[in-house]
Length: 419
Image 1: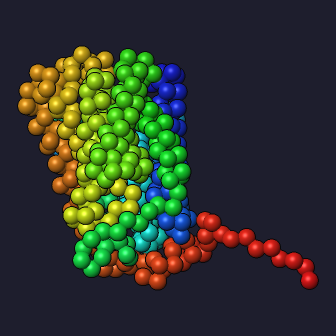
Image 2 (image 1 turned 90 degrees about the vertical axis):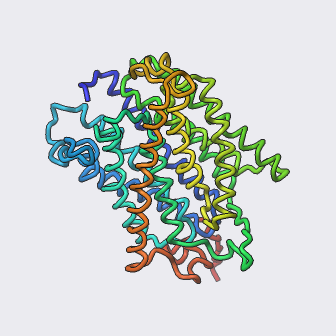
Image 3 (image 1 turned 180 degrees about the vertical axis):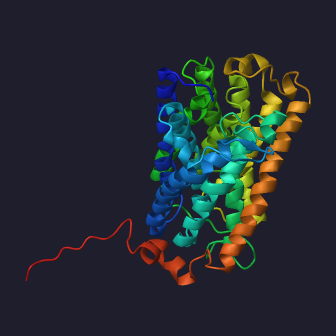
């Protein structure tokens, strides 16, 4: 990384602050989409996963991700002692920017595991994610590893952050099993409505706002000419995703379901993240439209066909649409847009780039899944067979707030009168 100017430093830090602000967005979305009796648990998981990510990424993760490359697979330097050099404050700036991304990847999984996961087991997962798995994939793509050398492009993290989080969520849900009452003996699915759509809506607005730091901040330069285009592309994709999801579910289920509209917006944001600096605004709209429909189909498929209970749709939003957005770079990238962001003559299949960019993007998306899925499947299996990952049935029925935390988010009020 080149030495930063003062203006670059301010830009990167402000962008990082926006990404940090996505944490309350995730907390509100996940608590809103789940039941009131588990609100404290959801909020604390979102809070503590970021706290754990801060320490583990500082101690281990950053070095594994951005240290000197070893065989294209992992970094071997830039660990804790790396921060003793106060003359290189640009390293602190870049570390903090990457730290908030690491925290985002970790928090994606908490919604999928909602309403039946032991808090202690979630803490162990958070450590493993921030300290090892996320940094390894990040090194391949952003740290100079083998995918970077292959020409794989993931500008702001559709794969590094979102599909890693989404595929981890898939393994967690498979090992956990569905919530009590989710499926009937005949296999049909029951809706378990969230308790506060207002929370969820506000959370999505916060995430949309924070995404400007997520995507535009990834330029790492305040003078990058593509920043306005990235902001526009991010906005258009999210808007298109919410609208296409709305019309799809309205046509299919005869009602414009609010939760699907919100997830459609998030799907558009996730999908545009990989290519936000390389595609035109028109392509951003198309990517958002496809993502909005794709997430609606995917959520229904996982829920009804595969019997995989994901309370907030994290697998579909982040795993499926993150993968789609990664592949979309190989289809929609255009040289005249990518050049402004510092890429040399990058074009996708639809704009004269041939098949090679698409094949590289497919390779990277497949590699991330092929690593993350089996590693976390084994991890959660071991966790399940040792300390366990699921709470007892009576705890799940009563609610995790009382049993796991000894409190309620919406405690009743009692007035005691002096006798």
